[in-house]
Image (cartoon, rainbow, N blue to C red):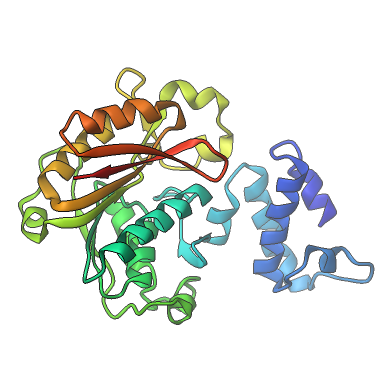
Length: 297
């Protein structure tokens, strides 16, 4: 296992490489502690070696460990991920936390719309935690929607998330409704009929093309560019579209919450205010970086 860690040292800092190997060993060997694996006398079962070597080959080729394992941890649950969807990031968990605060304050049976849903991690997290809510999620990618719909279906015994359905705090008697829609286009009539929504959330594409040189191969070579990148000359294109949808679909006392590019916080808030919303506030992540914009009708 130490050899495996060293083999990833050209791709990741040592602590991150160790974490990746630890995740792999926990999933494939059923051990909870990395130190247990490297103790003298521990031997990896021979029948598991070919699978581990295959996994390590994929990791050495820069494939994200989440794709190798087939799942990502998010908000205390496992979500199925593959190359059709973006891997959920830790900062997006805070987006869910902020959305949850808004939903608790609103009470009742909130109607929620998640735009650019991808894997569905935001929509499912809110639906699981607020089983009384009506959650709708939209994406332009049929492949992404196939992944999103499959979360917590329990239909596949090999699906990593299915066993966690009953371990959440909410019921999943009815999960989110997923809709094929392009946020850059007009608001579809079916969504208009489902509104108004008390909360709209979105983590749309916001990475500028000029930022690519600073990004790692595990992102550039494997994660879907459709979910990541925007033109350098119009980096707020998705936020302009989301603002237009929010203007059409938000309830009179509704809120919208967006994850943003930290370099464009003030510009994003200003764009939102230009649509006539009562307020648009930039909120920091846990590191103090501008990471979200909260909009009130």
